[in-house]
Length: 414
Image (cartoon, one colour):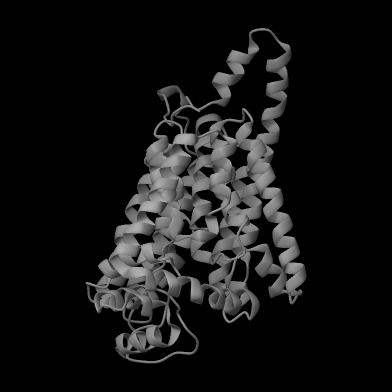
């Protein structure tokens, strides 16, 4: 694998329509927040806090600072803290379900007043995301693309961690060709999302990326040990005790509408399909994604498509996926834009990306529907077509003397 950079000859013009659409989407998403502030974002017009996802992070951190880290996993105790902060109750629970290492982040945020922490988390976590997208695309336009991605609004609105997840996956994929140890550290930090814990190690083994694999394992272990020393054995016992209850509530009982989750499992359940059918299709998809990624990463396919495929595969393979985690799709789109800008887009690509954007935007207007799953499948199809398009070139390289070097130079990152 070769490093990520572009020479001057590779810097093709960015299609004006792409720039215009991205600028409009970015401006609209940024402009919405002054409208929301004081009218439903963080604080309601009556001065009460808005019940939303970030409250589980801040309240978990508050319990850590008060000396009760294990209580962060107790739904009843945590909800009482949340009611005290918001000044009102709400139906259901915003339960804390992350592994204990993420309590380090929660406790830091809880040192700040709730509203400051909420807004600050969005401002801080967006920075590495912008850097990752700028590096992937290879030019400043990557930051505009990052802000234009339609899930940005949802992620900031609910105070979620989609920026962090996308930046860690993007950072890992950017660093892997030249800085495998740093790439492994990014992957180890991603262990706060256990649902991604299968595909990435599998791909690293398939690609014989042993330094990245070892670095990720060491980072994960060190985080676990540090959290055990900081928060005690009870926090880990509480995590394992409450995790099955959380899975039961969200994947079986559907306490959160299935339309909020963006997986094939949720899609089946949204259309009132049975749980057995949903799990069967989910596991078939997991197997198909795993086999495809192993083949892809063992092949000589150019690195952009390997990276984009892994980013999309991480989304498709987990049944537990809310819209804010679809931020990771921006990483895959970034690699596609990178190649399109430097070498030209295929005729269908920009319209298809526009359709994917419409699917993501529509979530805000038609209610909880797994449109993010459809967008991920659409982008996966675009990557699959690109991979398929590269096969004839390899056949030519294999049959014509001297052609292999030319094809390799064209299909690798320069």
